[in-house]
Length: 152
Image 1 (cartoon, rainbow, N blue to C red):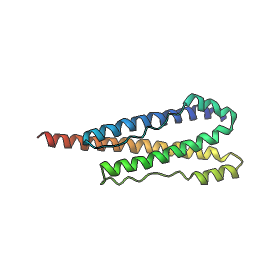
Image 2 (cartoon, rainbow, N blue to C red):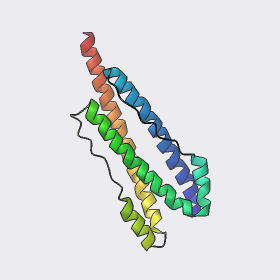
Image 3 (cartoon, rainbow, N blue to C red):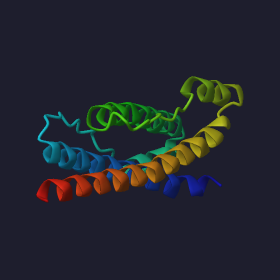
Image 4 (cartoon, rainbow, N blue to C red):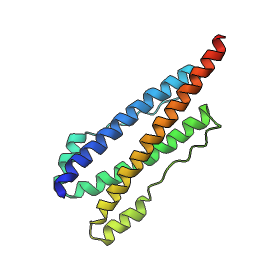
């Protein structure tokens, strides 16, 4: 079971990095379309190979799971601000990962709770990626319709 953690952490961190890069590009594209000032926040990339390899020491498993949780929460709040500025009619509700609750479960189960915590983090990221694709599709469709109307 422990061997499955290596690719799981590696893939989670790689997907996180790619998604955050794409989000920055998307925000810049939308801001340029509307000729609005938007200060894009560049989120530092995490070294997926190093993070995955570090879990052999066990303790980093908890830190990485916590940081993946925290990164997504900060990212979703930032995304909500972005959508409020450019598409106020969009009713975007950020997801939540109760990190304190999962940390307590992990402590109470002598570390085994991190397995459930990581499972929840991966699910929340997957839901976020699906919702992000939908948001991007809808916004690009709106931008295309607006540019078509302005050209006519």
